[in-house]
Length: 123
Image (cartoon, rainbow, N blue to C red):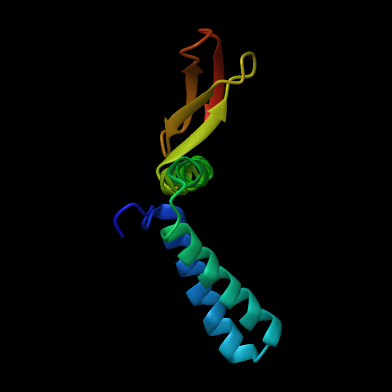
């Protein structure tokens, strides 16, 4: 492997996707999926044995950019779901800033930290 690119995150993702497609291919007995699986395996080998470091690095960086965007969106949704049981999330009527208020406090006056506007909500 001296002088070759090797395995990176994109190659690992393609191999994982290929394994999942192989399982579905075995269950569905679809020849088109078999060809897709073979193509993905060949793509992984071509990436691993490539000597074009700069192009493989650019491809991996693009994959990581999209992966991070997806992971951040997933983490924010997961965090919002966890907070939903403990807090109410209200938006300020004037500036639309999100404000987190603990549940079970009754009717309270809320002051927006951004614009200092006060409004009354049920918690």
